[in-house]
Image (cartoon, rainbow, N blue to C red; front, side):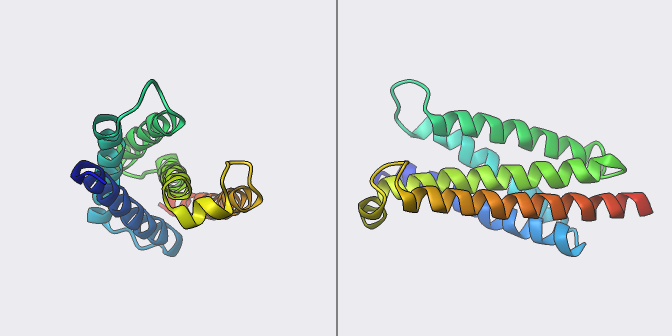
Length: 160
């Protein structure tokens, strides 16, 4: 594995870790400003380094997801830094953060199944039952988290 890929993976994992912290803060009502910035910057960084560092012949599904993550992050950044999480911007922020984190974890999961031989052995294709079960579990968990985060953010913004 090249040093550039190691940097890309490290930035991506930092984005996931900080994103989990941001979502936890949304769920428990404890906003941590520097963690928001860390999540947005590291996740932008992971998307950007994925485009620059990783060799491809054409556009990949991971790159398309990274474009969508970038779009969600732009909305999240607007919600927090321009909208100041006032009114509906609090819910918009919660949903875009959860969505971007989900997609980042989904890409990481897919790449892990592709590049870790033990996982590839139990799920050689994207239609393998184990792979499908993991993706469905992630989707269900994040749908629940998105609904809860949105409702909690909505309640907090209605009290302001």
